[in-house]
Picture 1 (tube, rainbow, N blue to C red):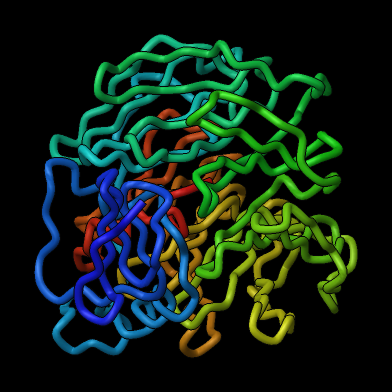
Picture 2: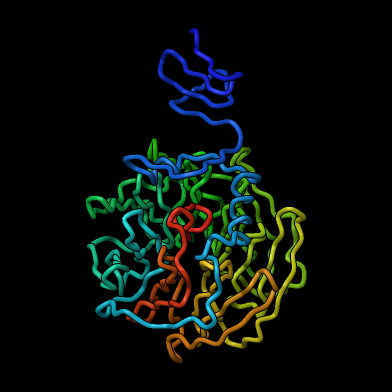
Length: 404
């Protein structure tokens, strides 16, 4: 099969219509080898699919973009709020959500977890500050946005994988986690560079892997007890937060190998629930049972802790990167919003949130307008943290950040 090459082997066009940049024999419709620098606007009939995936991560390309954003004077959305403002939106009495995903249409889907209190998918519309529901099953913790706009619900106690289609507002659960029958199977997940969805194992003995293109579920490598927070790195690997003082876990999707050889030094009998990638490439572990924030540096495999000064039993549950580059910790038993600044390695908590009720919120979702949505667990109100500047929607939708 002959091909046409344009510009010193930089652009290759095959007779079958495949196009490649930096490759001589593209095997799919459009292949790019190396980093891509786009100056100007990128538009298409579905810009989310074009920019989001299936994608190939590049540590140099993506991470340098994130780092540049923090120092780009022209990016006026990257500015600190003096003090966030907390407000609420009623769910109409519904509770029991655990995980939220920002949709390309701007809505936020709430993942239903507790069977007795929330058998409905929650839908929050930020443009109107209204909440509605869609009938569904429960028993899910966390969701993953697919390149085609659908959302995969990660099964914890549910028998089958859940699929929510926001274009039709319909839900289906017909794909079983074959071979995994234990309760409390998985807790959260991420979209991998090859388009698969990783399920973080809670009580399951192995990582779960779901291919949405073939609707096939498979059992990955052994990694029991790493189901309380994972972060997708720019190089495509997945970092798991240490739980009860266990070692930091790392999954390599290119080799399908899991390792846990990096000790979380200084952590004894404590726990983290949530992992957040920050602009300098480090991963912040959200303290729940621990009194210290955990910080892992993938480039050096180093680990350090920052004290929070909090004393509650379960402090925070999940976190998310704000528009100004800090990490907002979602209050669970704590009565204030926690904010960690990776630029100075300092922690503050000066915004009351949710009163004295325990088990308030689990996980948070950053909106393009800069607000943070806190998903209600035992409360009947959605928590809204405002006071931050807007952020580009592309960053909000990126799988490194839009996940739990």
